[in-house]
Image: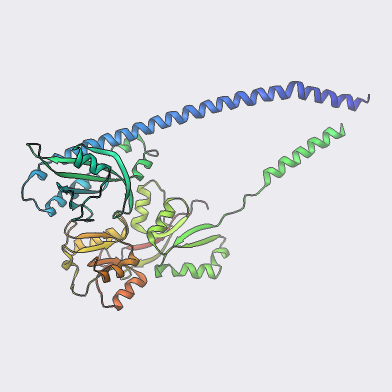
Length: 193
Length: 217
């Protein structure tokens, strides 16, 4: 056998018997380690994001209740303009809402910070069911495209009741869905408005 | 031995070829709409001025400003001919945007056109005024102009309507006035509708049309 052939065989034996198994071992170990790292990282990010969403919705739950309990809505003979001005002040303080609306007990929109769809009845949807039929606060249960805003919004709504518990209407905040997407990029401090 | 050497050399050649393979350069997609102040961009494209100065640019025409803005937000455009307030909103929404070119200033181009019976913006108290998109330049313009005329937010009703649909809505009686521009504005004035307010009435000439950020080049 020629020397060059022997050398080639030695090279091939060394490659197949030593280098390839080592490479395969390193490849699978590395792959597994990378997969574990990616999984852990994604899980951590998902948990963090869910926590941010949870906190954001909880804050909305708190501030819509504070707004609904405002004595201004319980004042008799209040004009829609006065309600609108009050809602505008609130919107300017809590910039998270793209608009805020006030509905009377008949689901008619009496005031809106953007002046949209005044005098129109709220179409049947999840938040209407929660607030008008079940009398509960609705936060994030309803997300849909709103024609007059031309945006997909998350609804935050609370019933307004007087001291005797009589249902007077509802206050509704429209929060752009972009805000939820943005949470992924914001730091913890920025999340709190 | 020679065979092994040849195989190794071949491998190196393959690797080098793979390393030097060029990714084809994509043109910058810039959204543009019907604003006359942007016309020179089309002239630049026709005359090959972008290429002359080393920029591969594809102008993407959209008749609706809102559609164009959405494409930019979705990352389907690299830049957009837009307005200053919208650039502020892009940045507020974590979409880093820079103004790289001021194309035009608006004076009478952006106007509030109303029914002939109105004498001024102050007559719009309690009436329905349209704007193009909430929290946009159009919305801001309507609110600021009316505020200057003594009509506060909440003292007028609104309609969210594309600027190109304002004339049809005026004719249908759906709105009393609305913000519009370009050919819709000219058509409405020809038909006897009245210009009640213009961009130049607030903060001088407030519309700065801009060319936003090429992120690639």
